[in-house]
Length: 373
Image (cartoon, rainbow, N blue to C red; front, side, top):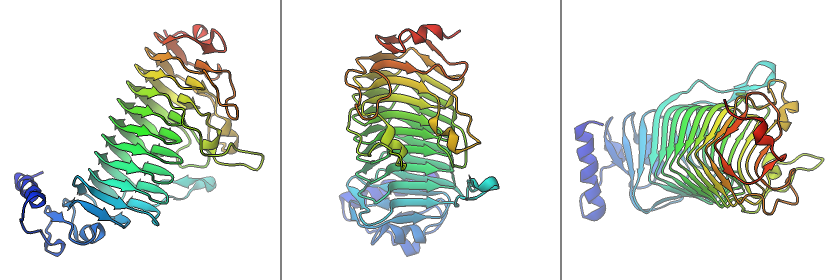
């Protein structure tokens, strides 16, 4: 950012402490700092690429739509979007998913280049705290996403993302969901009280590093689901995370003969689960005290619903993790194996285990048959 813009931000900080006049949204020029006077949406609508929108402390009962590239929404301490009654707290829309060959959907070419949201609390949305679609170069940082119904942070069909330093809790699906994306770093977030803490779904080149997933139903999930634009998940790094005591009772009923939500099948007490992902590195994590299982790699049962999906997990590496005290009380409704620190169904090729500290694997001794070279 130009020095002039930096100086304006510092000057505006004095507004919240003292008596300086606010900058009116209507007077904004490209690259300016706009301070919200009425609604965040009014400030966004007045903004040009490169502008920073500063949100003073207060509760904003609204849903915000961003369709302009290069905007930053900077929340002050105490700035809250209460999105009760709205689908999303913030929507950043650079395109839409459309039908493609064979009836399968395709992602849009990103129509927004550059978006940052920092420091806001977003709560009570009927669906998602922040929903990002068709965006290149996005940054979601330093916020709180509380009690949003489905997802806290939800980028889809987007590229080159950074999700860091957020607190997320209280979602019926994933706290942080990365779906149909390419190249994203999820780091230094704390996720709790969600059905899934962090989910990497149908995504390429995702790094999940230095996060805390504690007190969810499932800590970290890597999965390939049918009927989505990208029919695979590959090149994922899950490194140096704390994935402990994810024993929050699954609020979603188990799927029945008539179907149901996929997350309803996740056993309460799951640490790190890879369902059909390829080239996934699980390394240097602490995975302790999860009631059903610590780390698991299994074939994809959803592949039968999508001919594009290759069902077997390949070339995955589980290395140098501390995986202890897991499996003491497996979910009686959902667990399909006895409790264990490590579970592997021996499907796929090139999967290996090395240097892990654990007590119980299932089937017994399975990791010894698949050492890493």
